[in-house]
Amino acid sequence: MKKIIILIAILFLNVLATNPSYAIKIGLLTQVEQAGVGTNVNGRLVDVNTNKTVCTTDAMKGYVLVPYRNEIAIKSGGKYYTLGTSSVVLKTDEDGFVSTKGKWYRGNLLVKNINGKLTVINDIDLESYLRGVLPVEMSPSWEYEALKAQAIAARSFALANLGKQAKYGYDLKDTTVDQAYGGASVETDKTNRAIDDTLGLVLTYDMKIISAYYFSSAGGMTSNSVWGTHLPYLRSVPSFDDGVKKNGHGVGMSQHGANNLAKQGYNAYQILQYFYQDIKFAKLNEEA
Image 1 (spheres, rainbow, N blue to C red):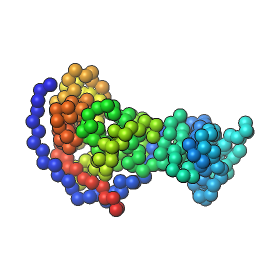
Image 2 (cartoon, helix red, strand yellow):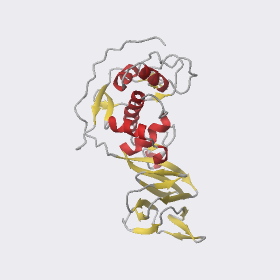
Image 3 (spheres, rainbow, N blue to C red):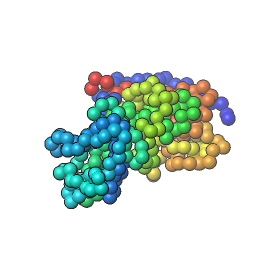
Image 4 (spheres, one colour):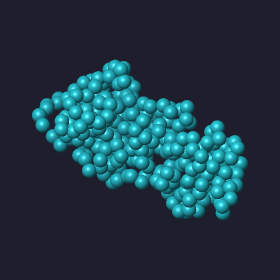
């Protein structure tokens, strides 16, 4: 691979008034007929409207929720019993995980009856959310500096797109429509460390957090526009993923390219300033 030289001044803006523990809502199931849920420790279903417990849950036991008229019902002993509300939160009584879709998640599960169907949402803090994004968006076996670059890009994308899926009652989907997310089930020590080592770091342009698009590989050159719209922080550059079949929209950071640059000795900040134009780094205000 052709060697490149990048001269970069790493600039950090003043802290932004956003808390790194900011809650984000991730859509796990949308408009389904039923949802299986559970907890790995004892837990409870709480009525969103009254904040009262409507049902307790046993550790490692599965429960089926279904829509019932304008409410939610739970299956027990082969029968369904209404919970008397259209929205519940599944919480653990102590530190633990909630479950749906055959996966474990940090945070809570919010279940809503919307127009006779169930929507299941993971209500979670931003950094914990990223722990379930990084290992599925980039291989944990890749270079550590590439993983750090991916963590910063994913954090920036999430914050820049809060409310994108508001019509469904949450911020982002758990698929590549937004960012792939596998919950606590996919976490690794290496990717968690990359998130911790970049705690609160985001990419900004003109004092605003950018939607840091990224993709697998461009097969030559990245694109300087997103779906026909030019954004000032995007530019077309060699993607450094030669030999890898094009996979993705080609906008922003090539993940294979980031890994190859990391192998050449570039750190996360150099990688990001290569793929994004005129960006600065900012740290979220932990006391906001």
